[in-house]
Picture 1 (cartoon, one colour):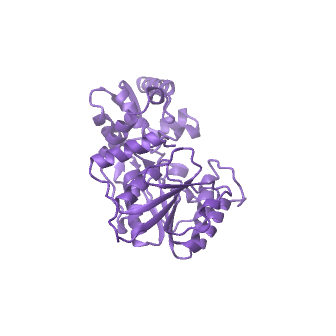
Picture 2: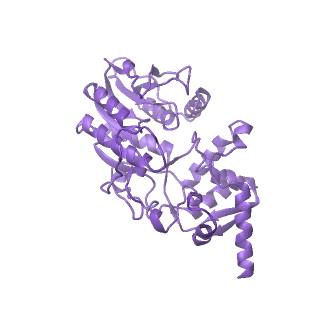
Picture 3: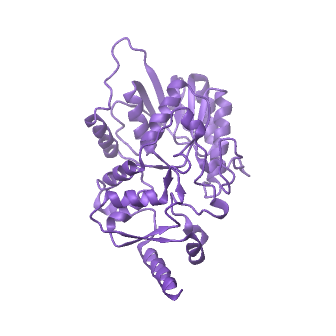
Length: 366
């Protein structure tokens, strides 16, 4: 989660770049936006973009990530899990649900807000799709929950829970809502380290394992591009379902590795590509999860080929991969040393070294 320091750093950088818009002049109609969440990863970028466009922003959250609130933003304290009193009796032009993943609570908040909000946007996930064996588009089947009242988020329940949240939100807003399905959301303030691992690892030097082949497709979305595009949907009151990732084939694992090396040119990192079949033979199935890379065979073969035609037609634009890599590494280097020393994702150094040794032995023996 993002703390107040992170949010202020982001705002300061935006102001230095001249992207923050001055307060609306007297007599200018007020545009009001409620964000359920607002202080995590997407929220700060979304808030900054909305303010740049002249929106008055309100956050609804538990007040834990930014205990003192966010400058220029009204904060309403509550909890998605039934503590919605602060939202009652209020009206907003637009609501963006940035934190909904437990269906019964999303249903409750959507039912409360729909009569007093003109338009809604629910941030879902491409994990909502039922299968990734083949490429998906917005009309592909979504996952089904066995227990619609479950609150337990697991690797298997997360996607179907998001799908049901979509249904509840759409039903409440009745033609006044869009559903956005991002893939791997990356960039500054990303605390998962899934994408960040690659530029950080490339900067470390030595021999670096890269999975699969350089041509393997990957799909991501820079959080800043996501925020800018979602505000386009908001301002246009666009309705529908939209996948939010880079276009199929636009980014590859080789491009990510090259950009990561270029972001740390003095590291001298040597890259060794280890084929998917070799990794599958030496690792457990769950260890093949190295986001944003995914296997090109089996149940995940279509995961990195998701259609983005609809989103592109509504104005989704994505920046060069090299810029995202560079900015992510620059942001990561601002974190405390102890945090930088403990990546939350990626390949464990000992396992990386052991796998590389096995790969080289296999090559020698072959």
